[in-house]
Length: 87
Image (cartoon, rainbow, N blue to C red; front, side, top):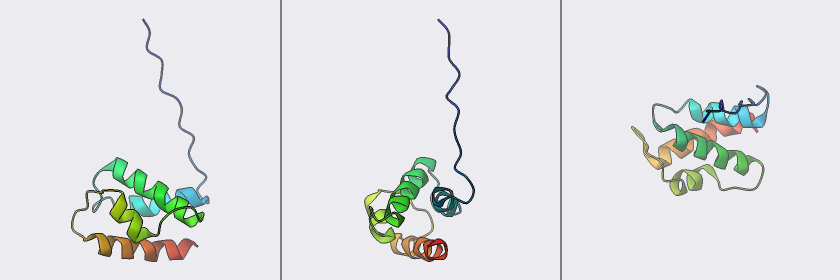
């Protein structure tokens, strides 16, 4: 039996909306210590910017995140301020 190598990961271009949203959420890694939580939240916020998802406060509340050092409201407010810069 052989083991296949993992599939290659195609990165988003640096100027894409996806990359900008994921970078914003990655900047909160001290407050969101679980990588899967950050990825799930970034995807939710990307959908929000595309007009398909919930606002940051609702996304933070519904994604059941482990948040350290901030309240849900404070985190949502900081994320919303960052998202306004890329809109």
